[in-house]
Length: 195
Image (cartoon, rainbow, N blue to C red; front, side):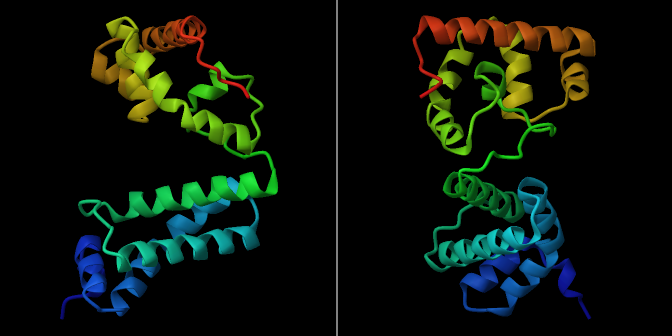
């Protein structure tokens, strides 16, 4: 007998969309612990984590029912993104400071801004993120390469070092210069980072 655990996420999603309700329970049980830990690491409160967790799956169900799911089998990253957006919504509504700092996640605005953005301002920053992305293309190639790997591909400096064939210190130096140049470009293009 084949164990249910061996069924892929994408198969379970398809089965659920086609009316097999139990498939969703398998997906929830499979990813419950990881998702719960992810949300808790942001909000640091068990009750709020429970709420966000439930809201995440309500949104997942609504999206699947509408037939709008198209993530090419990448179910967990998609669910994590929904949870992350709901965490930001929670911070915005409660006017609390997001607990996103001192993690491995890298946010360009923590370097470019004043490092003490509240949740609402952080959302504004995200809206102008595409403007900043355009400026990345104006950087010297070596700096652009490191910046893209670090921010957009979420690679560690060790991985960047291995991929570019330079030392970790060189990679860090290039990142530092990239950020200095980004700051200059932002001033030059008069992109408003703070409201």
